[in-house]
Length: 124
Image 1 (tube, rainbow, N blue to C red):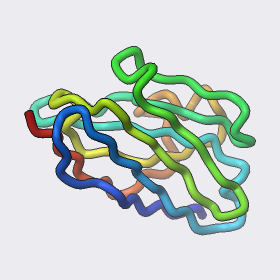
Image 2: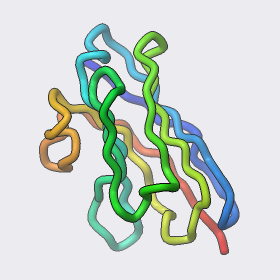
Image 3: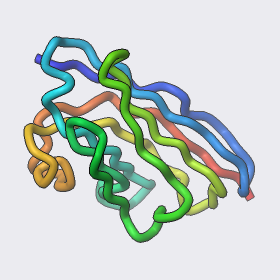
């Protein structure tokens, strides 16, 4: 089974950028649609971005559209989330996630594999 480990989180000032990485293990990574989710203090986990198995189709939450970019490298078994123009409201634990279809990978309750999460803190 695919296992996911996130990295790249940290503290950044508003307006800055971070790139999150998700390292995947297992030979079936390229068959998974991959998503990024986040959970802020006092809030439920929410969808951020998703990319299908071959990287051709992407979708974003309205709150991050135009600022965040999801990408994947199936040769390296990596998924990335480039975050630009960060805002304090982006502060959250960010989770890498995988599911068997593109549509399922958009829904928290339909995720098959979760990473452990990485903290992103955006200061004002």
